[in-house]
Length: 222
Image 1 (cartoon, one colour):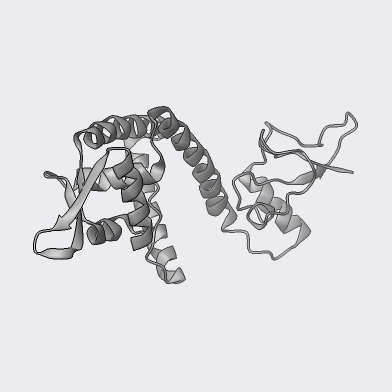
Image 2 (cartoon, one colour):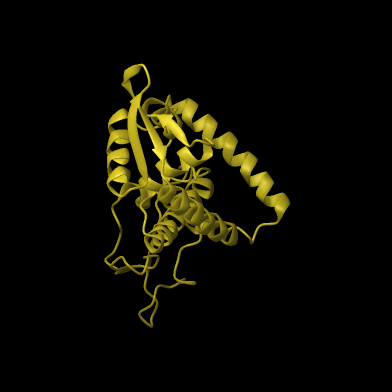
């Protein structure tokens, strides 16, 4: 009999998780199934989650020759993405704003006074489709966070402007998000943060090149 020893608290302990990201050691709650010891607990259960090196070692043991070099990088990235994404959603929920709306407001705020951009430019800077921009703008306009109007002499151009309420919301929320995330990475020294920033930039650029995809989601662009 085997038991799953690396389940997250909100996932049932029901044997191997068949989600491909997780099954190959890449997912946010990567798990290994191990024999139970005599006391009914997994034989080498540790602190409730499988160390990345154990996942790699298990694949090497069960399938010698399996390329496992990516696991030590991809698995922590998946896990961090899950942890950071969940935490940011909680911060934004307390602030009363969703990630897509914050992205829109942040792009306008970073543009500088008078905090106005065309919908085309919003799409370019947010790296989302024209349809997604329209939905975001409509939702933010209903909430009084932005206004929109035709461009002068260019009737097909739509200008979107940050309102005072939108400005106030983005100022408060960005501070909350960035202070919180600075706290979460404070276990790294300044030098380590710089090193990691450089390595992640290289990895992201190279991965996008290999995938032929220049897109990136709005998350994390505050």
